Image 1 (cartoon, helix red, strand yellow):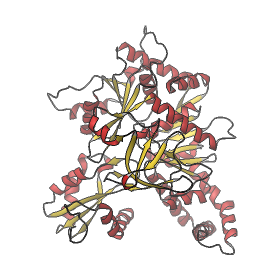
Image 2 (cartoon, helix red, strand yellow):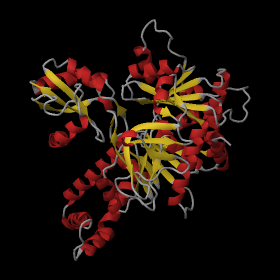
Image 3 (cartoon, rainbow, N blue to C red):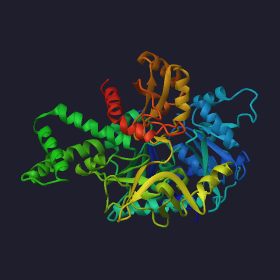
Image 4 (tube, rainbow, N blue to C red):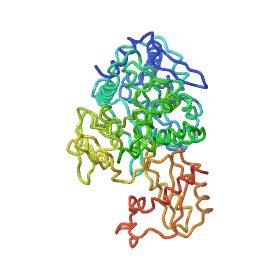
Length: 553
């Protein structure tokens, strides 16, 4: 049975049980399995009444919500190909994605998002902007339309998820029902390892946008397992919403965990007294024990585990947490070990949209900080030329939307070439070394190519020699500017560029280096290309100072 049918069966069995809820303006509203199926029915009748045909695209432009999930499942059940669109993306970029995917209908969460698309759509453009429907219209209900079983088969495409490449041009990754069904089996099985003695319903907190592949896969997995998923709708409320939800699991990105770690340090330091003394000693012991154990270490860890760490866990996550699931960007081993010290397991996953979000997942019984676990069962991962990770298996996508040459470039002899460098230890645990090409992956999971941004900033700095945008694994982008330029000139250039970019593409800090990068000083290749890894290594201290200065500002 395709995964849509399995999810519908699970919802029917949970007809009177809450399965999905959202926190909005401090209020929690939710739906049972039967109520979610009714929303899906209304959306399906709407699509059927519009006479949308199997294989046509359906865009979804909205923030996370219960209705988003219902529309997504309804569209796939009707045989449509869902194109999720990130609601915080710049309207001009959204217009480009809509033109590329050519949906027969765009479902919008509110009129403001729709207006943004209309205003950015060029006049006399061919093709014209597609028809649209607001969520309120979709869920009014349409009578007289007969529905039958889901119209999707394993080989059918169910979604096109756009991901940025090294050229900066977004590509539509086509995923089939078979891709998704296979991955849901893998993720559900891995969570079952954590819940071998599970009784009752797992509670899950979720805040990452559904337009991200791993986020979408996570929600479908939790629905399939009969969990109660609580959606955060206001990112500023995450610190309050997590402990109030008291989840067993939630998917997160390194940026959030780093922020939590700093927040705990600051709060403990502010509190002072015995709690700070025990916390600081226990942290020092944890670090020291990696090299040598000292007399008295056990006492400090016992005091921390008895008096301090349980209170931190409860305040951060509530009382039921089984594990944090972390993906989208590399997590510092120190951060993963820190949460382990608190008694909070952090399980890493690694993957790309092209691999249906996941290639590897930590085994809960054999977690190695800094590594992302073994490959998921049923897939193969190995190293190709230049230690590039290549993958094959049922999770690998069939190709990019309307891009046969780019598909052929990455799918060769049955293997998907990821563009990531990696290594595997004797136990089969993988470590991601870095990108072969220049794609920047922020700590939030957003992916972007730096070249176009560098060129746009440089155009506004005629006296600059080079502009190098950096930010891998960081919370935001920064830039290194070479040449005889002033801080005022650089800030003016950023003030001109940033307002036209989505939040995650804005450059928020910079460092000026008067000496340009050159072939002579080893920072450029023979043909004049930037040696980005070498620049990052040689300027490590300057980069750290730049990020620290912004934190302290």
